[in-house]
Amino acid sequence: MPILRQRSTRIALTAAAGLVAATLGFFAWQSFYPVQAAKGWEVEVLHRDVDKAASLLPQADGSLLVSRELDDGHGSILKITAHGDRVVLLNNLSKPDGMVAAQGGWVFSQEGGQAPVTLYRDGQFVPLFEGFSVQGLWNDGDHLFAIEDRKGDGRLMRYDWQTGQLDVLRSGLSETEGLTRCHDGRLLYTEKGTGIVRALADDGNDPVVAQGLRHPTFLMCDQRGLWISEDNTHRARLLRIDAEGTQHVVLTFLKAPQSIMADGKGGYLLAEGGRNRVLRLTPPADDATAQR
Image (cartoon, rainbow, N blue to C red; front, side, top):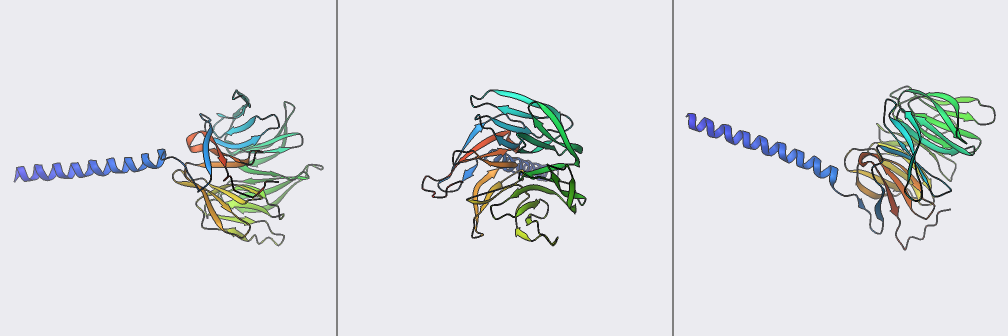
């Protein structure tokens, strides 16, 4: 009997060890499996070692601004020049997230608690208004829109550049992160927890324009349609919804992708925060869609 018990114990321990190894191997596979692109699309790593890359903002001189979404004053905004040199423009930030060009400079937000949405121009900081965990930003020239990523008490706000007035357009929002305006005039925003994208409506009943998503975060609209990145730690996707409403999976096996931006050369840049890098995405050579 003791021999049988010892044998049973060894079998159980071996099985448990095998299960642990298989589980660790599965998660390692998910973490390191290379990003897969849809047929015809090409993806490459443009910049590595960019801690928690979140928002991207290409500049006229060929440089790229990247917000590094680290918390507790460790966050920063990095400038990567056209030659690959790196300069920290701003530091001591808490989860800098949204960035958008505005007023001859650019505006940034901080998701790490209460902090002002700030305009940076000619080396000067201009606090615009206070927010709580502000993530998404959108500037249309007359107004700056900002949305808070909170649970149950988030707000969608509109700041008037001329008067400085701040209006709260929506309140009581939950896990709202991305914000963009499309060519048809709709202002869209994401609800990460419910996996949907809504359009701001005049009557206050914001319709769902996309659903069944996995933690949608950043949004962008262009001539190819609505782009959505899914902020999943494993097997995240970059999606595109075309003008007919058809959903296309452009990239898979991403790790916590964040903002996507047109690169001005017919392709796209994508911040992959989970792997601390910036990707470059090139459309198929026979793609007739022109970016305007």
